[in-house]
Image (tube, rainbow, N blue to C red; front, side, top):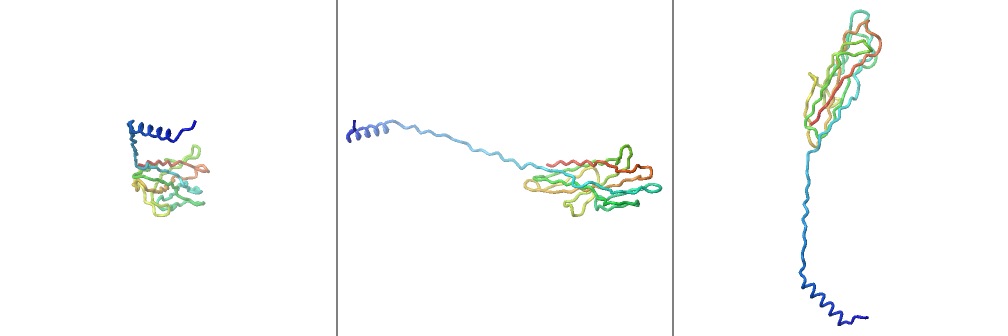
Length: 186
């Protein structure tokens, strides 16, 4: 059955009356946007980049001797015959977003080979660059400041010291000891 134009007009008219006659209810909703900000977290890494190496030292024919590597300069001092390329040990502290840092070290009292011991007295120094001059550090810890949030820094630590009491009674071979370093960054 086909709707006539008159019927279509009547239906449209009734529809419009219903729409105007029925109240419309508006709906609303609110959404809150939030964000929490915090300062970048400080991070740091302490790594050993080279070992303290005294090279090969010949024991004296009589008496005793010693060998020293200066932590500040890497200079070697000894009256004993030596070979190899002695060099100071080095560690590097790298960090970002760090305001303050502290590095501590623990030197061994002796370098050992099995039950044999050589007396060791360690020294250390620090610098902002591995190629610039180093400043001696007294004591077992060093504290410094860095740039804080949004910055990065490097600090280098060099290790040396004196091995003393080397004599004919010491066993031939390699003597070792461990220098332990730790870092805290805030």
